[in-house]
Image (cartoon, rainbow, N blue to C red; front, top):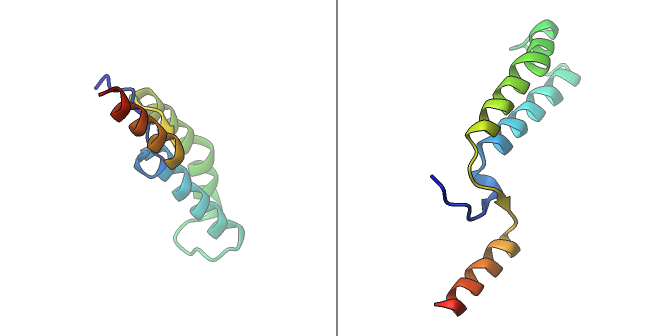
Length: 81
């Protein structure tokens, strides 16, 4: 896909991976998670997440933008039509 039109932030897989990482980290800090050991959290934060982010960045072909920027771009395109 060569479309460079900005997309909404909530359509970004990279943003969602990082939101999930934040949630897991917060659970680890407050020790509210019995799902992951401290060692697993360190492995996740230090090894897995950076690799996933690099892969997602490599696959990314569209920038993210705020609603205001997207609305402005769409308005300008309509004017040009």
